[in-house]
Amino acid sequence: MAADMFYRQGIRAVGVDELVARAGATKPSLYRTYASKDALVTDYLCEFAARFWQRFEAAIAVCPGDPRGQLLELFRRWAKRIANPRYRGCALTNAAVEYPLRAHPAHRLSSRFKAEVRRRLRAMTAEMGAADPALLADGLFLLLEGAYAGRQTLGSAGPGRSLDRLARHLIDGWPRRGGTQSRRPVRRPSARQ
Image (cartoon, rainbow, N blue to C red; front, side, top):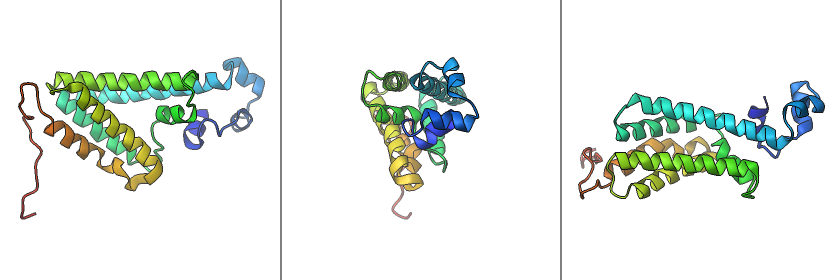
């Protein structure tokens, strides 16, 4: 219940009084479980991150040993998730925006999570044989983060609906080590289409 309220309304917008009233609980019972609202927020963000990594691993499992296929599957699934009418962006991105001070536990957790997403994208682009895999991974990371932000501001008509296609173009058009292009070039429409 708290997780849904934090996600739908924003963490700072939800007060402890509202949380306990909706839960039919009391403040002392909340504070027996969580030392503070920050501790509750940290738990919420950790659960969100755990579900993200479960979905991430499920997508990777679809294409074992094929980092290009894994990346495409990830972006296909992310685009589908972003298209959901109830989607409000990444909770960890949202938390970092709500808590801009780097010392805040929510910001620190969000920063560590995003660094790990970026690291894994870099590992996959390197395994794929991309020339300058760090740059490709950063491009893919920016696409994903931009889709999160675009969903917040532009809704389902935003760039998130094109996330998987944009990622495919970037991945397939990226040069490989040794100066070769992808083994699967981007398909261009013919003049007759």
